[in-house]
Length: 90
Image (cartoon, rainbow, N blue to C red):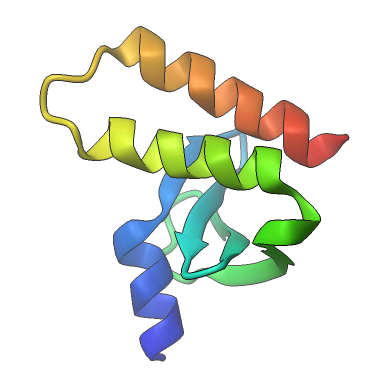
């Protein structure tokens, strides 16, 4: 339960048509999960060790920092979000 709450608090939401992909950095790993639209349930997809995909780790960390910044530009967030998605899908 604590892991799910941690993911919910620190995850960055990437919206799609029927579900939301959540990316978060949890210590030395990337946590990728999803939530169906309108649901508060988070389902773990996978965990990736930082050393297994350093590029994705850096982009997810950057995305989280942008999301936390009150003065961030939506354009910066969306560009970084897209990069995370591209890196993860490859």
